[in-house]
Image 1: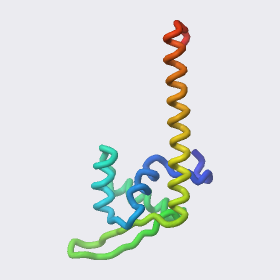
Image 2: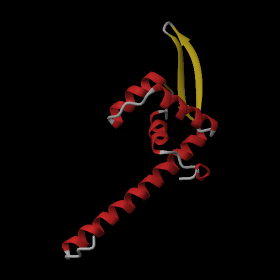
Image 3: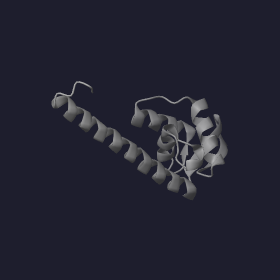
Image 4: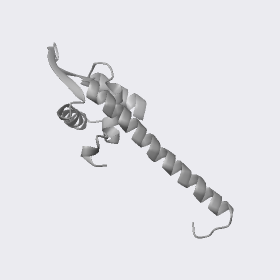
Length: 115
């Protein structure tokens, strides 16, 4: 998908979904694993958030606590629109894939050996 189409990547969409409200990087990594079953490295996450910030889809705040620097992320208005575009895009892709799967099953059931 071309970047200028305004559609976030799958990982970006997953991360954006987690920052509808302000969250720290540590919270995001924990929630990402809970919801996807996959770990995300800090480098991958921060790189994705830098791209999202550059596209004006999230705001990033830096603060300090007793353990050191803490970054927080939150979706902004442009990010909400991009999140909605991304959800619609991936729903269309999934629907298309499901319809092809149904067509393939029907062809196989009908004895078509070419599929």
